[in-house]
Amino acid sequence: MQELKKHGYSISPGTLYPILHSLENQKYLTSRKEVVRGKIRKYYFITQKGSSILNKSKIKIKELVNEVFEE
Image 1 (cartoon, rainbow, N blue to C red):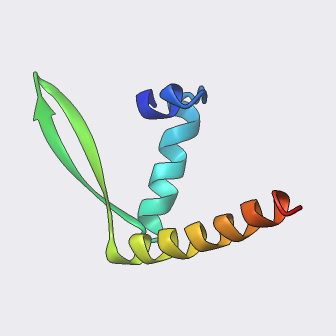
Image 2 (spheres, rainbow, N blue to C red; image 1 turned 180 degrees about the vertical axis):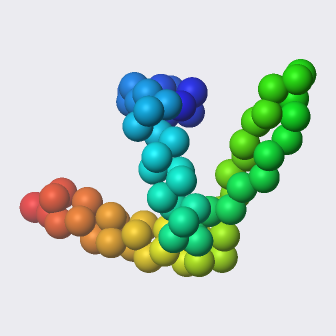
Image 3 (cartoon, one colour; image 1 turned 90 degrees about the vertical axis):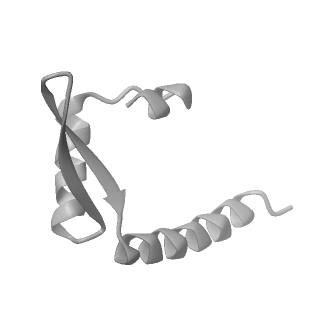
């Protein structure tokens, strides 16, 4: 949420965590729980499948941006 905020996006945990859970269910992310200062923290990591779809999405986004800025 902090990283998104740096880029001008304000997103609540009630919006973010269902997205993360969905991405995990689709095998784009994996997670592990860790106790930090007595609280359970969940850390998410991109999977190979997630990395592949991310790279494909970047290509599509670049195509769209190029079309928008064509003169």
